[in-house]
Image 1 (spheres, rainbow, N blue to C red):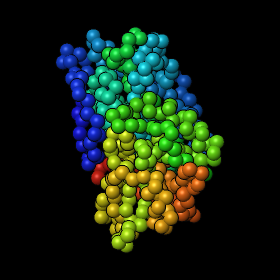
Image 2 (spheres, rainbow, N blue to C red; image 1 turned 90 degrees about the horizontal axis):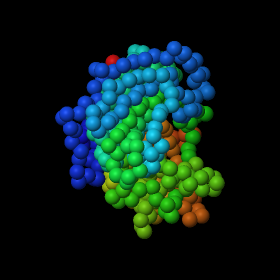
Image 3 (tube, rainbow, N blue to C red; image 1 turned 120 degrees about the vertical axis):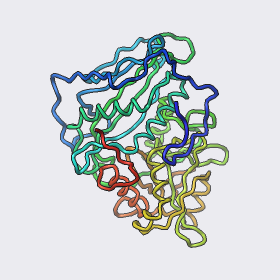
Image 4 (cartoon, helix red, strand yellow; image 1 turned 45 degrees about the vertical axis):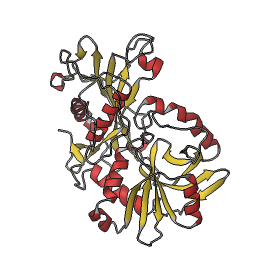
Length: 399
């Protein structure tokens, strides 16, 4: 597996001591041997306005398996349906699962396209390696995803803000209870049509800052998209909801460093003391922060003078540690002008308040649902994703 910088994305600090090298005698994932079996009973398309994230699935899925004696099976695209797993499978016993979140969009030319998919594939490689899952060729997985998207193209709504969510997943399927790495695996890819994150229009969200529970810690798996990172956050999320907040703002350490918001990266826009615009601040990739594709894209755009000029923005992107106490101080000084949750699902969402120790840090609210920085980033990224705005080859056609 290749690990390193991809199109300017920062390296993940975590490095494994040993990397499983592919066995030359085993079969590699070979998309040229793909078999496609189409359903005999295609489902009716759902009305776009009824779509809810992750609730509707398309007619087909892609599947391949890894056996330590033979390698990867020939991939198949087949009708969507249940998987068959041994009850002792590693994925069920030890959560040896990783996944990606991607979207396919329909461009003005009628072609389906992906947004910076190579970043998702490199991250999938790193996640699988962190869990000591069998090695694979992520370029082959990307080709398989493109083939599946072509098969399911009719499911991509043509309305702006709508897309086909793609969930490539790799699970350990070793059928034994020993506490050891899984030498068996299954790759499967699901697709699900979805609408805008805020179907009733953009709105700000509220966060409850917590430090009693943590999402990630140094040397852990926070910088990887592994299943075990998510379920421990469900209880804090429920607690936040009962207190009237939409999501959790994760704090870490005695100094209460700001890390992420729910399952999204978190940015703040702060007025500079020298009057030279605003700082655009997010936590660094120290192994506790997921290297999000949208995060990397926002940083790249705010480092682009052409984007800043077109958006009439003066921003200074900074990756550094900062604390909840910094947020309290910046707010008191009138310098905290925007806080943003950034990720694949929402793209960019504004924050209107952050609860901390019984008080709220309040932020300016904007009639459009986003401030000038959040709106400029959202419009630019959505335009690129939907093929209306060509930028740095970030939009990749499925063909």
